[in-house]
Amino acid sequence: MRFKRVAAVAAAATLALGMAACGGDDSDEGTGAGSKSFAAGSTMERLNKAQKIKVGTKFDQPGFGQKGLSGKPEGFDVEIAKIIVKELGIPEDKIEYVETPSKVREDVIVNGTVDLVAATYTINDKRKERIAFAGPYYEAGQNIMVRKDDTSITGPDSFKDGTKKVCSVTGSTPIEEIKKYVKDVATQVVPFDTYDKCRDALKSGQVDAVTTDNVILLGYIAKDEASFKMAGDNFTKEPYGIGVKKEDTDFRNFINDVLEKAMQDGRWKKAWDDTAGKFGATLGDAPTINRY
Image (cartoon, rainbow, N blue to C red; front, side):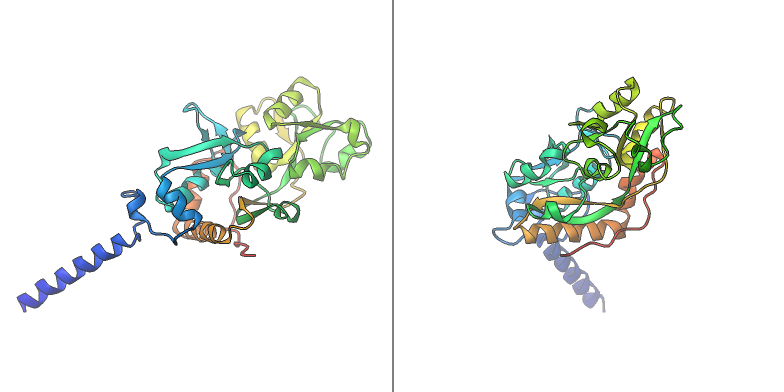
C-alpha cells in the first residue's frame, strides 16, 4: 500500500511539471518567455519571444490613463493593459507606453507604432473600418462638466440656443456627438488635442463646458471639486474596447479570452477599485464581449 501511495504522488508531481511546461501557469511567478506557449506565427508568439510590448494609452485621463509621479501612466485602462500583457508572459517593466491622443489612435495601430491601444477607446463601426476591437471591458456614458457656480447648463440641449461654448477633443466620439446639439458648430464647439487643455479652458472662462465620458469628467472633478461639477445625466453609451490591427483575429480573440477571464476571477474589479473607482464612478456589471 505504501508503494502505491508513493507511486501516485510521483505521478501527480510529473503531471504538474508537464502542465507547467506547457505554459498553463497564471501565477505572479515565471512570466518569462519560457512560461507561455502560443501558436507559431501569431502576434502572441512574436510578443512573447520579444519580451516587450508597446501599449498606446492616454496620459491625461484621470482614473484611466494619466501620468503619475512614477512618470508612467496610471489608471483603469493601464491596469487592463497590464492584465493582457501578463497573460502574454511579458514582465510589467517591459511595457513601453506610448501617449496616444484620440485623434491618432487608429493611425498608431495601422502603422504598427503600438501593439495595442487601451485609451478610453469607444467601439464604433466607423473605427472598425480601419482597426479591430476586443471587448468591451467597460461601458461609459457621455456627460458635461461645468464650473461649480454655473446653473445655466443642465444637459446637451442647453447648447441649442447658440450662446454657450463647449470643449472636447479632436478625433473623439464626444466631440462628434455634441455637434448634434449645438446651433453653430464653428463658433460653439472648441476642439483641443487633450482634455487637460479643455479643463484649463473651462476654468479660465474660455469655454462654458467640457464634454466627454462621465468617468473622465469625474476624475477631473475629484481632483478639483471647488471648481467643477457635472451637469445633467449621461446621454450616450460608450463601450470601451482594446484596439488592434483589423486583420489580427487571433490576437483579438486572445484578448477577448483574457478580458472574460479577468471579469470572472476578480482582476477586472480590482483594477477598477484601485483606479477609477476611487473617484466615485460606478463599475456596473461586466459587459458582454462582442465576438464579431
